[in-house]
Image 1 (cartoon, helix red, strand yellow):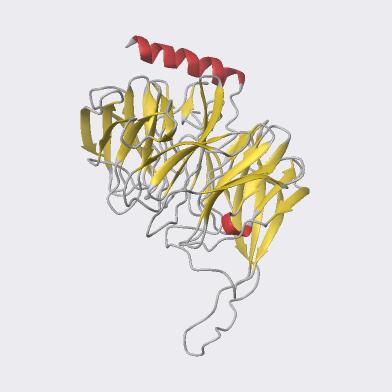
Image 2 (cartoon, rainbow, N blue to C red):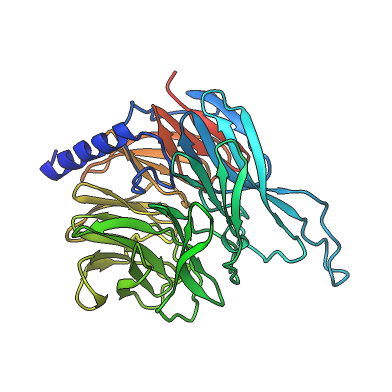
Length: 425
């Protein structure tokens, strides 16, 4: 094992062992690393399944975990489809209850469901066929739960499901629906709002839900909509919020929202992958139509497009799944099922192999292994190594776009209708 890999493993263990709960999208550090009890690498709809629970409605938010509870969101139709305005064009859209849901992590029983917002079917915009009206993942500070429904608004609930506050001040015209997940930065809830009409990043006060700061994007793009999740990093003792958008990625001062640096990547739009950070660089995907992966140093000021991009590649780059950094290696899987392992410092490709057909979920790392989940509900486990090796393949027989949540030796995996707790028996 390389020294850098060993150091990452030690770092991951010390951070995850003290805070093993999976409290946000891609885990407590937002990087997709798990270092708890040993996980299974094989399962089916019955094998190594502690429980499975049908989740009402439809949603692609990933589950999160805190103190023996699982939290996620869903969108539940509450009225029959309304007649369309123009006759002869089929049924209209139903009203939808946008809900937060809590389950007992040990038993899989639903403890509570709370309607946060009601979406008017007659006014609801169209969404992408792979999207849902409940795609952003919740987050928690250990005391409260924060949920987000894109242009519909954000809310804070106590852990028993009572609404503390709602905020729907930051409306925008969504394209393909909502997607970007919020993050917690101290006492602020931060998320991006990159619609067809306006593009910004905003921070809400977690106690009141009021706007603490809001910053308009400086980038220009002919297709400005995106769906990214920010990442909080610390550079020279100062916190930066790194947030990709159409045409560029930027870092913002965590306290004020002031832009620190930005780097352009041309015409990339509909950006989805969450950044990963390490080795003094941020690693991002640039979105449609032709995605590229960029490694960018984070110690710059202003426009760093020509000075801080260390390397980039379009070969095997994902549109949707986030990247995974393990020591000196960067792992990724393209939407079309090509997995790659690269030297993170140089961009040199160690291997590229087909592992499936279609991917949207983000991978995670545990115990020397990388877990990759396809849209067909197939998980492929490969060794985290510069040599390609498939260790196991498991099928659930139902499509999924949500990413994993992992804690205490168990994997929580959301399919189109079910939530599974997967654990070795």
